[in-house]
Amino acid sequence: MKRLIIASTSTLYNGNYLEYILPELKVFFKDIKTLLFVPFARPGGISHEEYTSKAQEIFKTINIRVEGLHAKTNKADAILNAEAIFTGGGNTFVLLNSLYKHNCIAALQKVINSGTPYLGTSAGSNICGQNVKTTNDMPIIYPPSFDALQLINFNINPHYLDPITDSKHMGETRETRIKEFHTQNTIPVVGLREGSWLHVVGNSITLKGSLSARIFEKDKLPYEIETNSKIEF
Amino acid sequence: MKRLIIASTSTLYNGNYLEYILPELKVFFKDIKTLLFVPFARPGGISHEEYTSKAQEIFKTINIRVEGLHAKTNKADAILNAEAIFTGGGNTFVLLNSLYKHNCIAALQKVINSGTPYLGTSAGSNICGQNVKTTNDMPIIYPPSFDALQLINFNINPHYLDPITDSKHMGETRETRIKEFHTQNTIPVVGLREGSWLHVVGNSITLKGSLSARIFEKDKLPYEIETNSKIEF
Image: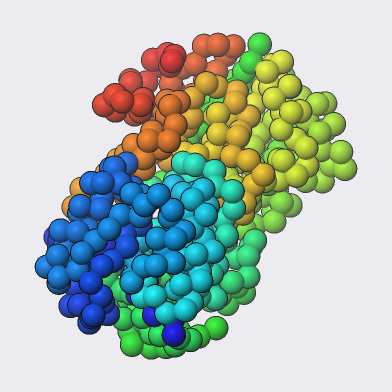
C-alpha cells in the first residue's frame, strides 16, 4: 500500500532541518534501517555529497543510515531495492531533469506505488503531483517533460504564501499564478503552507500540521480546508 | 539599428498602466502611428481582446493606434510589416509557447534586429534575453524550448526583488534562485527593479529609471550598477 509524506518545506523559520516533522518521521520510518536520499535538487547549488551529509546528520538521530542516490552506479536499481526514499528540496527543474536523465521516473513510480515509504519536501513534494507546472522555482534547466511522478491526482504548491498585505511589489501573488495555471490546466492544486504536509496511505490523503491548506479548483473560488481533513477530488 | 525599451514592469505601485514610462514612450515611439501589440502573456488569464483594449487605452493618449497580434491571420506577416511592436507582461511560458506555436520567433528577431522599435514589459522583457530561464513566472505550460529572442547577450530578471528583511517565509530569495541558475548556466543576469528599464540602441545598452540594477555573473559576487550606466558583458 502506498505510503507518503508530502511536506511543504524541510525547515521552519528559526528551526533546524526537518526538526518540526522529526517525531512524525520517527513513526513513519519505524523499522527502516537505510534511507535512499535523492539529492538532485541541490538547494543553493550545494553538491550532492554535502546535501546527503546534511540529511544523514538529522536521520542518524533516529538511527537511520542515509545513502545518496548520486553515488549509485545504477540509479534505477538502487531505487528498486531501497527500503525507503527521501527526496529533498531545492530546484524542481534540476531535480526532474536529473530523474529523467538517470531513468529514475518509472522505478520511483513502481516502488512507491507498491509501498516503499516516500518522504518529499518542497521540490521533492512537487514531483509527487501530476506535473511540475505549479512549482515556485526558477526554470534554470529545460527538462524533457514537465510530467512528474503522478502519485496523487492533483498538484502541490509548496511554500504556499498568502498575499502580503501592504506589499508595493507588482509581481503576481501566488493566488494569481495558480489562477493563471487554471487557464491552461484543469487539475486541482493544493496550496500547502510551510509546516503542513500530506499523509498518504493508499488512496487516503490527510492534511497534517497546524495550518489549513488553500485549495484551487478550475472555475471555483479558492477555499480553505482544515488540518486533519481528508483530501479527495 | 536595433531600438528597444526593456522594462521591468508595466505598472508601479499606486500608478496606472505604463504611466511612469509614458513620457519616455512618447519620445521612443515618435512618428509611430500604429503599434502591434502582442497580448499572448495574458496576465491573470484575461482575454487577448481585453488586454489589447487596455494597451489601446493608454496609447491613444499619445495618439498611437494599437492592433492586437492575436487578431491577425498571418502573425509572422503582421510582425514583418509592423511599424513598432509592444509585448505586454503576464505569464512568460504562455507567451513563449504562443510565439513558437504561431511561428513568430524568427519574424520578431528579423524585424527587431533591423530596427523596428520594440517595447517589452515584464514577460515581454524576459523574451528579449537568451532564454526564459530567469523568469519568475509559474511554468503553467511546457513550451517547445526555453530559448528566447536573444536580442541581448544576457538574461533579464524583471521585478527584481531584494531579500525581504525579517521574512519568516522559507522559500528561496531571488538572489538564491539566480545563484542556482549559475550552477547550470554561464550567461550574466541583470536584476531589473520595478521602475527600471534598459534602453537599447544598436549595441549600446543603458540602464534607465531612478534605481540601480543588480548584476549576477557566474563565479562573481553580485554587484550594483547605477542608473544611466552602460551595460556590457
